[in-house]
View 1 (cartoon, rainbow, N blue to C red):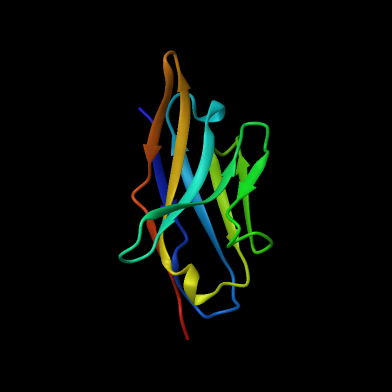
View 2 (cartoon, one colour):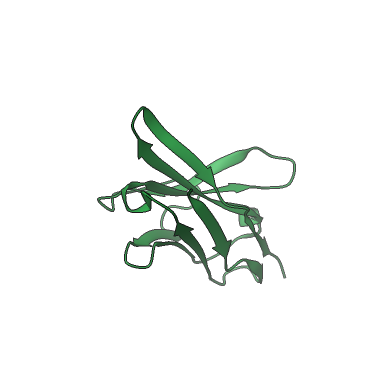
Amino acid sequence: QVQLVESGGGLVQPGRSLRLSCAASGSGISRATMAWYRQAPGKQRDLVAVVTTSRDTIYADSVKGRFTISRDNAKNTVYLQMDSLKPDDTAVYFCNAKVPVRDGYLEVWGQGTMVTVSL
């Protein structure tokens, strides 16, 4: 059974940085494509960044150049380094794993961590 636990959220002033962590456990995590999503109040959940098993990355246009996703397979952890934060980055951030299985993939979500960017 795959489980994801996010940490690192909090209140931060505009222009500052935060690093989110997603600790993963369970079979197949090293073969999973990992991603961060976010959901602002009253809005849909949107993709923020993706990192593949070969460490290729994809970013939403709104965070390109400010956010960096990375993974440490030895620690089964995925990170999201967020720099130059803006009030529009305020949201609950969710870790996501797509684990390959025989007939497709298993999608797993963490419980989310709140990021608030405000003075």
